[in-house]
Amino acid sequence: METKISIIVSDDLEYGLDLASALNDAGMSVTLYLSRTNLALYFGQSPYASSNLLTTALYNKSLLPRSVPVHLFQLPRIRDPRSLSAACDLSRMIQEDHPDVVHIIMGPGELWIAILACLIRDLPVVSTMIIPQPNLGDRLPVSILWTIAKLLTLGSDLVIVNGIEQVDIVRKLYTVHARKVTYIPLIPRLAAAKWLDHQQDEEPGTVLFPGKAQLRKGLEFLVRAQPLITQYIPNARFVLAAHGEDLNRCRAFIRDESKFEIHDGFLTSAELAGYFQKSSLVTLPYLSASTSGMLTTAYVFGKPVVVTRVGALPEYVKEGETGLLVPPADSERLAEAIIRLLKDEELRHQMGKNARDWITLEQKRIAEQTIQVYETTRANFRKGAIHL
Image (cartoon, rainbow, N blue to C red):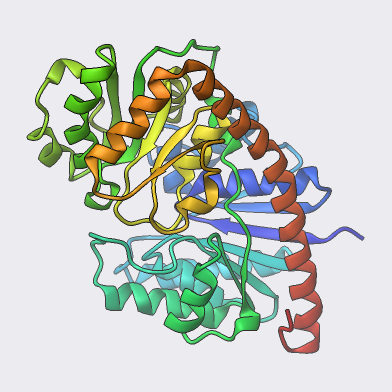
C-alpha cells in the first residue's frame, strides 16, 4: 500500500508545488493544502477568486499533476482570534483525510502554521523550517520569531532544515534533540519555468536582481557596483525585478539611471519567469540569508549566479561551475565576479548548463531523501519515539 502524505504550505507555494510534484513522480500519494489568499496572489487574481478557479488554474498550467488533490484553507491575520478556530478546522480536515504523514512547510512568523503542528496529535508530523533563525531587518521582534519556531519544534516529530549548519542552529537555539532534526536540501523551483508562454532569447549584458528589496538582500551593493562594471562592460544592464521597502533607499545610490531597468511593485510569476529567461546572470548580494528559492530558480532557467557567502547559500553554488561566490557588503568583489561572467560568454553558458543539469539530478535525489524521512518518522511514531 502506498504511503499517503499531506503537505501544508501557506507562504512559499512553489516549495509545496515542487515537492508535491516530485513526490508524486516518485510514486507517493500526495494531498496538498494551500493558502487560498496566497494562491490568489500567486496567480495575480482577486483574493475573492473562487477556489475552483484557483485549483483548476494549477492543473491547467501544469504546475501540479492532476493526480494530486488540492484543498485550500484560509487563515486570518496573525492577531485575529478567528485564526485559532480556522487552524482547528484545518487540523480536523487533515486528520479526516487519514494521511500516514503530515508535512508542514513553515516560513518565518507563521504563528498559526506552527500552532497547527501542535494541534495534530494522532499523526506523525514532519516540518520544514525554511528560515531557522531571524534574518537581518526582520519586522517581527526576535522573541516572537523564536517563540513561533519553538512551537513548531514542539509540535513536530521531526524538523527538516535546508542547510547543513542549520541542524546545529535548530538544536541549540530551540533545545531540540539531535534525533529530531535532519538536513535535506532545498527542492529546486521547477514550477517557475512552467510560467513561460514562449522561449525568449538572452539579452546580452543583463544582470538580474529578483525578489523582495529588503535591507538584508544587499541591493545597495549591486547599485554601487554598477559604475565599476560599466567601465569594463559598457552595455551592461541591471534589471531590478523587485519590490519592497529598501528599493527607494537604494535608488538614491544610482549614478546612471539609464543603466537600470526597475520594475517596482508586485510581479506576476509569468513576468518574473520572463526576466529570468532574458537575463545573462542572476546576482544575489545578500547580507543575511538561510537559503534562497531565487538561487535554485536561476538554475532552473540555466543561469549562473553571483552570490554572497552567507547562510547556506554556498552549499548551493559549485564555485566556478554553477556560479561565483563573493564576500557580503563588498561592491568591488561583486563587480569583479559579474565582469568575469559577462566578459566570458563560453564560461557563462557552460555554468548555466551545469546549473540546469545539477538541478535535474537534485530534484530526484531530494524526493528520495524526503521519502526516507517520512518512512523513518512513521515507523518511529508507532514506537512512540524518534530514532534517526
